[in-house]
Length: 491
Image (cartoon, rainbow, N blue to C red; front, side, top):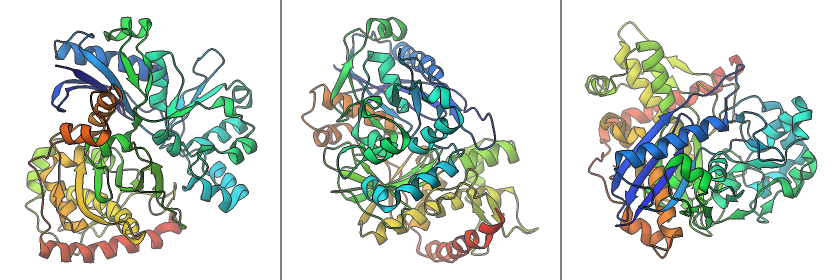
């Protein structure tokens, strides 16, 4: 029986997920690491830490599954998006990677947007934001000029891991389009941006398809991971594109509601979608020629982790869920704005802050706990309403990420979003997406559609919207929407 390995490089951990040709999990192992915050608003990680953790995750998954490396037919990757990895002439890492949630380059993002104007926006189909590659590289040029001169290659996070596995430099269309250096309209690295920043096409990798073979496991990587030398490695995908695959979402009409560290509402489209307000993202889907449109929030599961860890000092989520589920829904709140790291959709405001509003003596920690969960879904509703206003049909919503494991959070999503919420049988959708790419790229399946049909299965958990709660939440949502404009000048 063939097995496939998916490596999912996240912001807080890396996971190796091994599955068979039906998508059935054989084993998995994850290794945690931290985000470094050398100054307020900064977010960095050492790519060498990623690689060390990846080696341990792979060897751990093989050991748990009692598998030899020769059993793995192919390897795929998924990874955190937008981050900036800078390599020198010998392939050495020049500095810690600047992550997607880094806020240092707000000024640079604004300057680039102002200088290049609508022509840049219309070619990228996306607004620049602090944490995306162009502002981060511009920041390095201004603040670390000697290091900037040493840059020979600019990579995305998961592409660095694949480089360590194979010794080959490259990227693929989903992550390239999300780097915001890639001109979606013309299908090339943006000549405008490169010229403005003093960069050349040679400093960027060739762009391939996610299921194309990128190389094979090198002898060195084999000795360090337990995988067999010569095992095919496909390019992989950015984590949101991989997560869509892991949920079997290939065509328009279905959206994923992802509550991980950050949160996203994503839905496929047959072509790129122009949003003149610039508060959504248009990125390439893993399926050739397809795109997905995304609204993104920065602090989804992170908000609940912050509240339970820093305020409650209690992370027994199951017990907290059970108690909070007994509370009646009230249009009087309290209301939580989940802007702990600023916000992307719909505000694009790195200075936005988290807020509890409407607290009274009648409220307990459970009301606040539930308000955090509701606030996260209100933020996702912001994104969903924008996608629907762009004439993107959403008939079905599939819950993904850690939020899909909470019965209470599923019900809150159904009641606030006003849709039936479905799940899939896997709780590791992005990693499964990487496995699907490996199975397709190695030729086991003819295409992604066939692979998803065989490897993605419906879950048993689901939630239906309750009409009474839907009405109450609509009223509470109006309060939520009114708060940011009134507080913006105080941030």
